[in-house]
Length: 382
Image 1 (cartoon, rainbow, N blue to C red):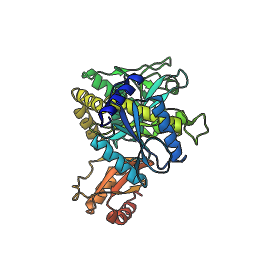
Image 2 (image 1 turned 90 degrees about the vertical axis):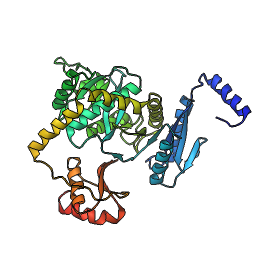
Image 3 (image 1 turned 135 degrees about the vertical axis):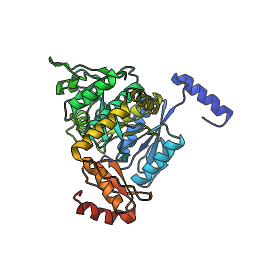
Image 4 (image 1 turned 30 degrees about the horizontal axis):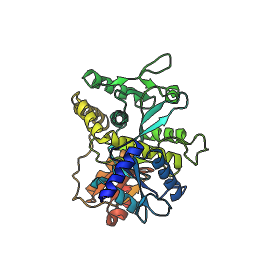
């Protein structure tokens, strides 16, 4: 809003002309790191602004000519830092970026338009790791997918589970929650034998509103849906990999790929704005509040107890004093990452688990990295 009286009247006139007097949604876009250059991302941002004048896009980075607002950043690390600062201060309502390391417990829900019937379907999830145990992660993915669908206007989204490892166990646990009072609408496969477990045909037809899977499978699906018409090196369709969602996550950050083209950039910006307007963070909190009334915590604890009985109780290790961790160590199997962190804790190295663009990471302080790598190699984690 302009500071002068004349400027206020100009804002009102503009709002009347565009047919909207609502507060505009401010979406940040980092423009460094793309395989197609900063100009491609800026073009996507300008397209989104043109398609929806109620979105204000703020570019973060350098190297692109654009009429849009620009926050200077020299590299991706600085761009992410400035993006987070703007989100937490409230200057941005949401953001779109690539190669962002979400913490364990946060993963992204993508949206695709299925080729068979042109239906919008949410893929839960597409990047990140909701939990280090597969079934628990997919249960969390279910809640993340439902919350995102509700933020985008689906009042009672149907849920299906892609036929991957763990699907049947996820089904059993979801049915327990439903029987205990959690309001859950289960989809039915279009195949003759039906059921909540979805086949490839259901994926193409978009049978459920929310398709639950593991993040690695979801990531592959997103890449196929977005680039099958271009040969793979340019993502031309869709809305990117979606917002990171977690039980108590405090910002809306939508992910795109380094291969995402301008049309996908624009779609991701629209998706981010829709999540902001639909109060995604509140929807996620409400979903967890509802499922906890149906015994979510007890169910997860019971699953952990069964898993511990099978594998033997993991040794409890207290973490050393907390440090600022800015260096990451990639290449560790996600199912072993918490054990690897405990190995470092035992040697008085503070470490945290996380998820980078290419997979799980362990984050340590720069002065500890060399020794941490040696210990992880010695113990068979690298």
